[in-house]
Image (cartoon, rainbow, N blue to C red; front, side, top):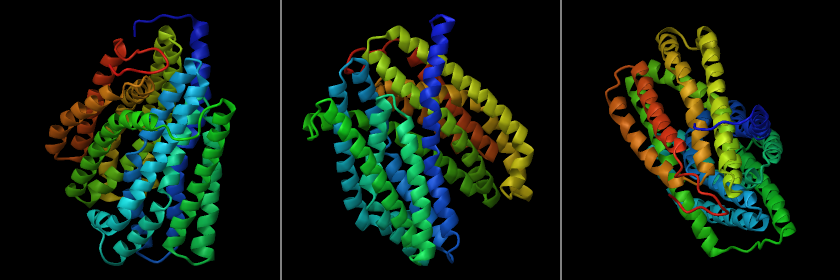
Length: 442
């Protein structure tokens, strides 16, 4: 990037990035820990309880994943107003995000409740497995408003440059979820229903905590708690572009899983393990991206273009550095990974082969995730939506002709490279650097 700055300023940016990114990483890993804890506890139940949990969790994760814009868009909007010195309006926009989360959460629950059997069937579940999956999904849908309020509440606090409180709430929710699942599933004998109820209670209490924190802050700054229909519509419009972006990401991953499944049992087993390793490493890189959302929004809101440039440059350096470290770590751990995941024979051989592209793509991923966060923080959602569509189209032909698992991951490499090009070109320019308390999309 065409930017120079003193060493002191760079170190100040580094401290700010780490202050936001380290707690954000802890909060990010809470969700997979929720699922892991549920899996361990439900694993003590007779078959097909664990399979039913997997199907229902996949469906629920897809529904909630599309609503991650509630966190991202709210972070950008609140941070921009904070940078402009208008904390009252920042909290007003935060309340709009919470109201939108509540509305969408209720709508998802009402629409998906009767469709639960159909949704489960889409995942190929039948018989008793399908019946238990429907039970888990329907109970979990009662917690959907809470789950989305957690996303929006997290976005408000991140926009206020606070990632420590979301970490504390995530740790408390994780602990409570584990205790309730043990009590409901094993103590009271509620079976898979107990696992669902435990998660609903934990998520709902987390949502209540965020509501209390945001409402208290809004009142302290004189912001109205009532819904502003224009503000809610604006939050929804900004979020729609991020839904398109997120849908493109999920489509790429679903296509990869579908192709790997058709290759055979060994291939899908190796692909699943590789994808889990990739996802875990992505959490650390996403933590830097979250710092990017908060820092960029605040800087542009304050009209500090130079600060936004410098912070972006430093975060890209952090992304590259972390990517190189992760690449080396995967390559060093590579001989041990098959045994760690109990992979044998052809599955182990496939896994060892595919870990090469997984490792070598980490530096690219470091830059991609950081720039994605920077542009989200700038409110450049419309560009991200179009870029998501074009990069997905670039990926699909390569995925379609992939005859081996390594070729499939190389196709994912094409996708990541296309994302790198589109994001870097945008970040190098100035169209995304709209300053002031609100953004007019470029």
